[in-house]
Image 1 (cartoon, rainbow, N blue to C red):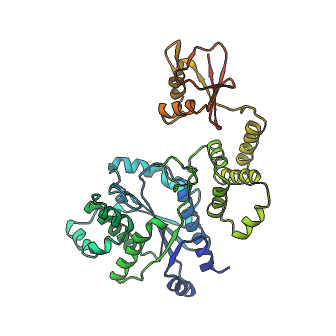
Image 2 (image 1 turned 120 degrees about the vertical axis):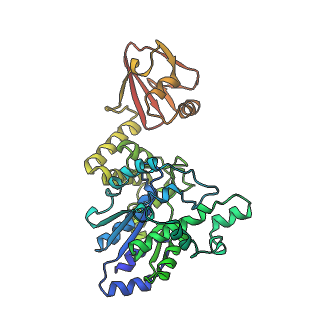
Image 3 (image 1 turned 180 degrees about the horizontal axis):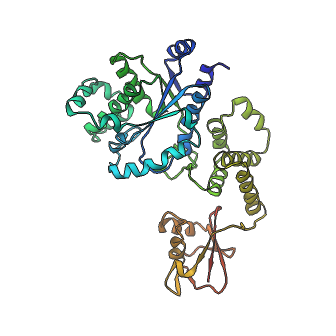
Length: 392
């Protein structure tokens, strides 16, 4: 398989392949750009689809140019949104950016990665420079974007700042002189703006390669922290394994394709096996990729112990009653929420209402249920993955 075929694997759109072929035949080391806005502290498996593609370029000997959008994150990328994204403070953005590189290098080769923060150039840009950049785009061209066109037709406000976002992202391409820009399908318009701006600046317009948006745990919407249907790079091995086991069989094959980069032929072969085995293998492989083979095998063994043999895990966290509440008796919702194992009391209430909470193997469905100071350890289970003990 030649390089272009490898790069085209799983791609939804590949523009500029012929120019890229000429550069490869000339022996050029490609500069492959990927920008991420640190709007949240964690990368998800949705990001992994495009990170895998960037790693393929690296494995072929090319340079990854990773742009941390500390400037653009303060604007808010409107791609795929029906309203303006919340604006983050610079302090929030920088805090989120701290963990991005450590997470990125779980997939990327650090030695083959060039990192830039786009405040490097935008922090020096004058208002006159910004106006000059704004002249490169017309309102009619901007309204070609589906999300902008829909909002305009629905009379939903679109701020001038949002109109500037594709130009600002495109300007990054000029500054790093990228030969290729990667992104999800929702980034196609922005990436093409970068291609046009490069040509206007006398550079060779970058090739544009967009990847499909990974479906989330619900099997319907794209994976997103906003939808709560995500798996994060920083999830614990147990959570990562359990979340993968919760996906549908149909979604599982997409994960094999986009996360493990299995070819259609490889997927066709393993489809002959039992779906449960395939899902366990996928979960084991993904945990192993982030935490090592031994950890992947350990989580597989734990899963089979808990779910196949209906046993409880040996290494569940323990919480002292006095650390959870100052009362001799308290509501179960308060006690569970105090463990910080759940995002909110609302989520605890939802689990109880759905009958997903057990105390010493007995199902609890009363949201007003209470607990008293235990005289011996009490095992609580929430859903399929969360087990913990409350001790005296």
